[in-house]
Length: 76
Image (cartoon, rainbow, N blue to C red; front, side, top):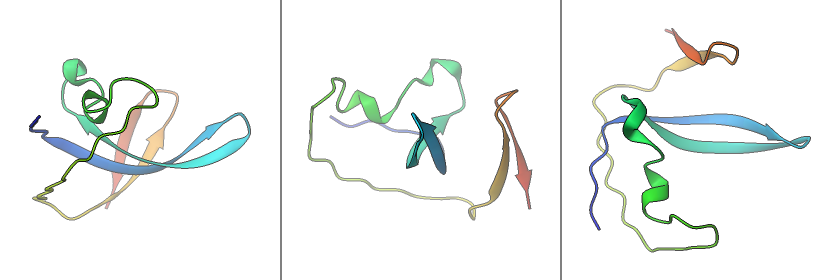
């Protein structure tokens, strides 16, 4: 299986039930994008060997996330 993704990687803290988790994921440009990584393991408990090739066209930036409006603001 081979898929091409154009979007952003992110690293953030998620809080569930009083616990904090480091969450690294990806976001696409369109609402129809869905969960890119889940395409490879669509059911809970699945595991698949993968090879990642990542190419970046920009330097990482810090963002300030506003959880109430689901919008991000760049902090350069």
